[in-house]
Length: 591
Picture (cartoon, rainbow, N blue to C red):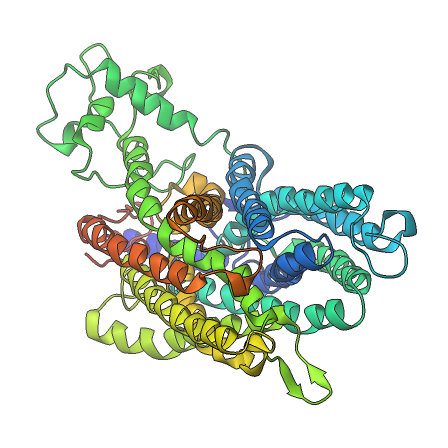
């Protein structure tokens, strides 16, 4: 009877307070009814909307600015866009590390947002202050050196701001949902889907309204709008502070992994444990740490770090952490090792995504963009079709496919994360094949009528490739976000989002490298695929080359995905009613 009363009392307490190691803005246990979940996510998604509005307002028109205002040739401009995109998406690795280990996610978002704002302010000044503008009045054949310096300083300052903003904000938003509470766990499964709808909304406004202002009013006015929107959403984000749940930084997340490697190496000559029960672990009821992980059979050589030798005590205060690791610490090291093949096999997909903000945009600039006789859409606005495709695929997936697949498979997600990513990769393959076909048609028009060129071809011939790659992003990009958030150690979730973004960053660098290699090889064999402009290039061949790379890459990806074992989380000893040991696909009990 006492046990039943105790359990009922605990269940009541679970409904009142959140017991997931988070605190409220005053450092107390968060009240479930007044903190976290969607009530907090509104403030977080609002600043994500602003950041994506600013980022895509800059990124999608950057190649246009570099070629038309700074007068760079197509190849140089594409490389500069890829370098900037690469730095912008690699920086989150550092930002995530600092946020998880030292600053905390909320302070990291706030500091990086201010840096982002300063970058936008400097960019605005480079286009408004007379002595900093590209040139004086009239036609500008060569930009002022001071403008070039200030312009690139501003956009790379934005890169630094993005480095702390992106990984911290996304993981901070997901932290608002309690994994050990059934209702909040179900809501969390939809969080990344609706997060990306907010992201795509910012993208769509950027490539329609902001890009239109850049093209028809002035670059400076567009920058003023972006700067003001960022300033206002920083205020909104701070206003949500009473509703947030905060995770305190726990020191360097890499130190425990280094200890595992040191301990495993020191005990390399010991025989393997015959049973997981022989390995060292803290009690499940321990409150001073996060969730515990079950032992898995991968990377068995690391298990030796958790073997208790005769001279080692099980008393926590006497344990040397550099000589004896817990099962959870060993499993966290295994999680990081298992990420590597997925990260590597995601790179070809990222290379294809990099083309949407470079060559896809330049294609649209050479085509008929008139809607009516007096209204012509800016080249970068066509990029908005990819946002529409992504919104459609994410909404349909969340509201239609997931309920159907959940009933068919028994998986709370519908399908597991890696299956979702794989579907997106296949869609991306079809996009590049289609993009090559459309580019071949455009080039045929150029060759048949060199004077008019492809201006007789409607820009909406590009609509299918934009929409389809957007739909692929709804599977692959959202899946990668979920994967790198969910399958890293709990103490590394900002760094996990940084790893996801680094896929895109490394892919941008690889795209530039691939362009250089292809340019040199094709130049030696005849005519380079990359001329001074689009009409003298052979992007159709390049797109089909990317399609072939993705097709070949799908094979090792499927092999890795089929053998992958998901994070296997133990229930807290005091939470008996939550799902069965979370075995399987991250948050749910699916093998």
